[in-house]
Structures are given as structure tokens and as C-alpha cells.
Length: 143
Length: 124
View (cartoon, rainbow over the protein chains, first blue to last red):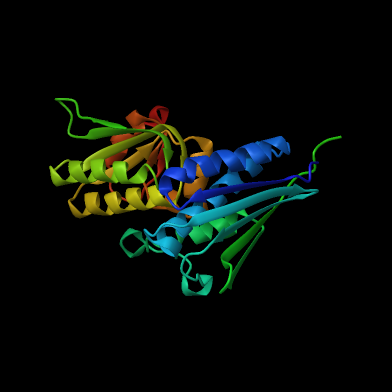
């Protein structure tokens, strides 16, 4: 299995979400990940980048830097931005059991990230900004 | 996406295509809100050609469902592709939205009281 790392930097615009999706899909396909894993990783990255655009930058312009590396048994995606500091602890999880009127709209993106990936790690550094590292355990390529 | 209401029908079928994400969800929202504002609160959303939906799209559908119900109407989904269906299941939205296997089943669900259920055209 390849150990190559792929990188992409885009501006914080929803118009770039398709570019990001294609980048992740192509990197995962080059590493021969299966379709289910590719879909999960692509969706988790889409949700993470949407959050960066809508909340970290909230209309301001900035860069989103992505790296995707497939190692034996796992795919690691790192997303960095220089938007407002993000603390995931401030986002309550969605209540998936309440009725229609009581359902909260927010928090679904973060929920999907944690549901689709095996590990999600958030950090903030005053010099380098926000970083989220997402890890997906993947099947080894057949030899 | 497009919305079609046949002359002899009391409901509108909204056909959505491709990805429903932060890019395209606002367009879907605008279309659904326009329908609701003009009094069309019986809506079938045909998802046969939807390949992906993110939380942005789910939010738009949830808000439209609420508003339809508040107007004594209903919003039913149909023709969910397996991957899209799994997204709904991940957050329990398959228990919130009425979902039909096809448009015919979905139109019958429009007339049914809650809770939602899976129905195929052959079951009815």
C-alpha cells in the first residue's frame, strides 16, 4: 500500500468543496481503498471543511490546507485553517431520538465526522491555527 | 433540481439531482421555501439521482418537513440510493422523514398520518 502523502490548499469558499471531494477521492483511489471507505472519508472531510468555511472563517477569506496520507491499515487526513479557534467541546451532540419539532439543526457535521472516521483529533495553536486530524482504519490492499 | 405539479394532483414532486451539500443546499432550500410560501405543502422529494447528501442538505430537508407539517401538509422522500439512505440512518432521520421506495408509494404516504414508514408500490 502506498505511503504517499497528497496535499491541497484552497481558499475558504464553498465553491471549493467539490475540488476537495475530488482530491480526497483521487488520493484514496490511488491507494486502492474500497468504495465504502472512500465514501466515508470523503463525507467526513466535506463536513469538516464545511465547518471551517462556515464557522472558523465565517465569511472571511483564508486558506484551508489538507493532506491525505494512506499508510498500512489507515488513512490519515489533516485539515488546517487560520480561522477562529474551534473547541469541539462547545458543540453539544445532536439528540437522535427526539421528535421532529425538538430536533436541533446544529452539530450534525461534527457528529458525522466522528461517526465516519475512527479517530478525530482537534487542536489549536496560536501560531498555526486550527488543526483536525482524522484517521480511518482501512483494509490492506490485496497482494 | 425541478418541481413539477400536475394539473389534477394535489401534491408537487421535487426532483433533486447530484450532490446536495453546502454548495447546492441553498438552491434546494429556496425551491422548497417557494413552494411552501405559495401554499404547496404536500411535497414529494424524488432523490433517485441524488448521489450524496451532507448535513447541509439534511438541515434543509428537516426545516422544510417541519414547515410542511405546521401547514397541515407533509414532505415525503423517495427513491433513496443505498449510500444516501445510510446517511439518513446514521442520524436517525429515517425515523423522522416518511420515506417511500418510489414516487407512487411516496404519494400514498402523503395521505397517511404519522409515524413514517417504508412502503413500496407493491405493498399498497
